[in-house]
Image 1 (cartoon, rainbow, N blue to C red):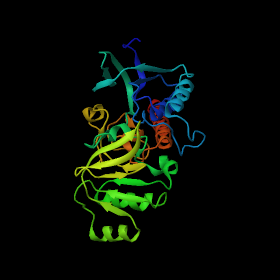
Image 2 (image 1 turned 45 degrees about the vertical axis):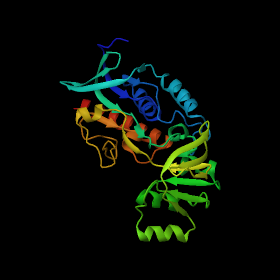
Image 3 (image 1 turned 30 degrees about the horizontal axis):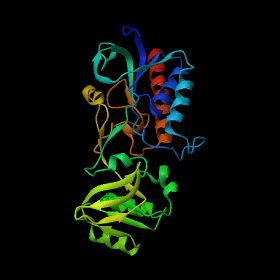
Image 4 (image 1 turned 90 degrees about the vertical axis):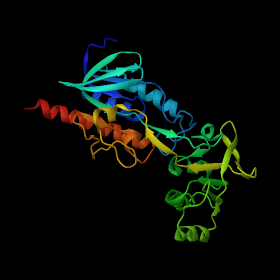
Length: 303
């Protein structure tokens, strides 16, 4: 691919949000380059749910169909590589990839997702997205009425307890150390017959990602079929920060209602800028980012 060409828009990240943004821009006759390293954050997840028309489909299959549909628009190209740095230029932006190629564009969209920082518990990462899950709307129906745990503490544990009790009453909170729940939270949880276990967890035993039991520091165990958890996160891509994009307290890229970041000419969509992590949300915010970026470009040209 010739890297001396200047694109209208470079989209970094070619999963659901990036592809959705590319479709909106491709249909608007914009010259678009998607740079994607083919490592979506849900690559271990066997099925996607709560997305109308695609309920129960494999995430990789949704992405395959989306890619084929987007590439029907001949102004859209995909380059398989990892974007590692970016800079402002006199007339837009430049992006450099791991393979040493440099691309230029008038505008940028980041659809780069976030990186989950796995807890220091043996076996947890192998279960993530399979039986260790974050979202009951995405996965709760599939583990309804099962023996379920919540690995969390404080306000996060309390919120999960309120929410997940709708899907199962066989529920235990594992604070993985001394509880930081308030007395009021603790009493309310107990009134709903939810157990609280403060033992330190050393291992999640599983069979190909399906949880069997937790193992504690004192070598006792607890049988489970599913776990909810909300690991810490960090941005998957450092380039927005390099360009000066502001982050929120939750470590997400700050965007307005139209997915515009705090840097002119830069938009963000998908998990990197939303607390609600779902394929449907990624598609919606990607579509918004692409449409609003095109609108910005049409207004600038209409002088």
